Length: 303
Image (cartoon, rainbow, N blue to C red; front, top):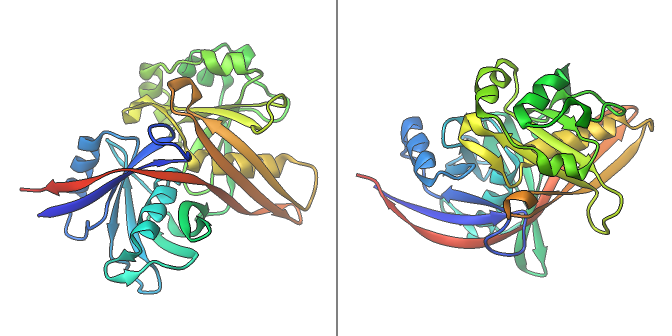
């Protein structure tokens, strides 16, 4: 079996930064076990597998795998896969030439807007498949122990660490400073033994900044228990974050947009554009997007 793949750097306009993604373009004959094995072989934060849609009104079914498990939804894999298919212009014989695609995923339908400079495809922007849900608070001591920081580094003026999701649940914790964010270092044992007891994919730390011209938020996401010591860009966590920030704002109606950078500390700077819409006190829509660049393409000869 010959599988065609491409790799894309997501949430960047430069190669070899941002969040790398592998996209297997013709995965219709693969079993779940084979997809998991291929994702482990790529050993990137995520690998996507493009399959024919169950409903012909949609472009594709997309399965998303980390090196160790399948994800129901994730941000950078959707953005990068939409970018790759739009650049190719075709998916299973059907043209991909409009400004919008819809993917079928475990978490639901994911509508994605294709971003262009003139006629050139440069990125994508997704609408999350599920409305914002905010779950239980999580002890600051656990977050601190898992991430190698002091409980005093955690900012609780706006919210305590908590679980939030727009399709994939994360523990979100605000820190008081960039210094605390930069000093964080994950403890794999705590993640494996304690964080996994919570109904969340992993932990994202963030801090709000007001002294940088183009950046509103700096973030880091750790998932060592998923074989991802640190993720350069986590769209699914950041789209939940923008939803949470909109929910916390006092206005009943607003459109909140933030520019978020992630991956700086690991040398893979990523830039994410996050937006949430709030109507009558309820967050009704959340979006995450950014630019992408192609890097590699090739063939997997499956025996």
